[in-house]
Length: 82
Image (tube, rainbow, N blue to C red; front, side, top):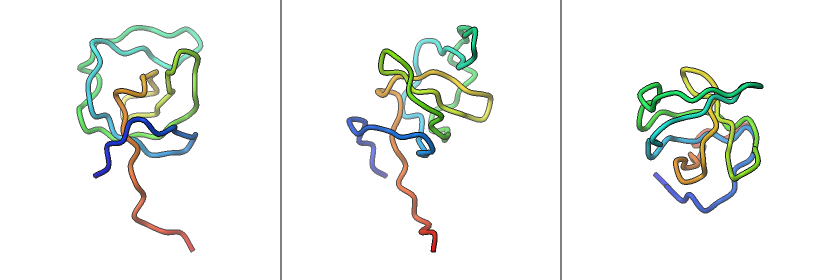
């Protein structure tokens, strides 16, 4: 698995959570802080878009959250669409 966190993400990219932040912020019009136990290390999700401050909106199993690049790794897709 490639865990290169320096690459830029794009909307629609699949990512994996490689570290847990001390807290997480929901990606809602009025964001709320949540404890990190709402996320699971190794959980996969989809990038929804970029936000100011090097944050990414990521759709995970329990909702959409704003996460910094340092907590995410891009997953390589093994299935090629024809």
